[in-house]
Length: 420
Image 1 (spheres, one colour):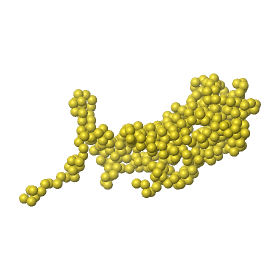
Image 2 (cartoon, one colour):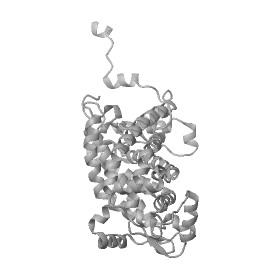
Image 3 (cartoon, one colour):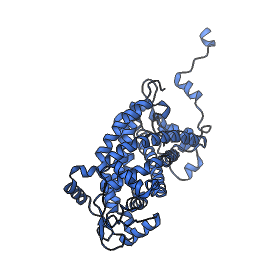
Image 4 (cartoon, helix red, strand yellow):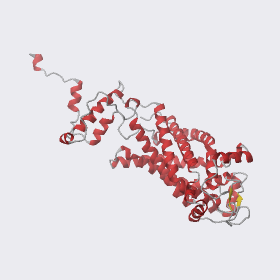
């Protein structure tokens, strides 16, 4: 009698079923979460937050790591800049990259490929501090706004774009002078069209960055260090927004196809009765059919849950692979889209002033953004705005991918242990 009066205790699986919301009571967000398994569709694994970083370790170690990366990739910038500025022949085709390398090495040896390197390494230290700090803070705030607006995770690339644009805008005050000095060092000996429009002259260079700084201020004043500032803002701010926006979006796309057992969001459908999901009258009669299939896929994601009940964390190799693929795609996309603005900005900064197109005769040359663009069109036609586009896409992809993987690795190694 005692056993008959006591109600049987439901099993653990039935208790979970009692507590689970019904199909019709769950929201579409819940459906997406269930259908995606451990990692929600359109999201990325948990990132190291700016507040969770050991800032001292991050910047000290980062200074050395980023300088090494810059040393490896700097010749690409020299080649790209010289291709954009070169005016030895009228036409749309710039000199080949290997031809530029041979000319530089023949004239100045291997060190010629590193003209302006010291300026970049020293000048980017404060720039990097401003850029990275602003990037992370704005990204975090923008993501909160995206969540408050209940935007889907795939749309959170907007937050990455906002961070990139703001960081670039804030850092240009320091970045433009460094760009001008280093670029004028890079193009030493490049043939450009004379101010008279007849023939070409070769650009003279500077002994070092400090000499360039003194010469520019003496000849053009302090404002000479900010020549093309507006063009830089118009080029680099959207360029940074495009790069980070696409990088964040590509990451979400790639994580959505990474198998759940590797820490991604893709759940395999083998062995599941989800074939009922199809378009047609039958599906219209039962609107919950698609949701039921989503729940079935979510059940399959249980294979990606460890014995402790926590989602499988993606391995280092998977994380780096996704970041590299995202960086390459983002670099190629942003490199192509921003080349026309970048070539005008570069020519404006390099060809203005007494060390510009008329360096041989000492005549002072003044250029504006529009006059530079018009001159480029007259010399090389519409295709002139894409001079060096392939090396630039390659440069942006390699630079961006290498820098961002170094940056993400540095964040992981600089994480404060106490961070939950």
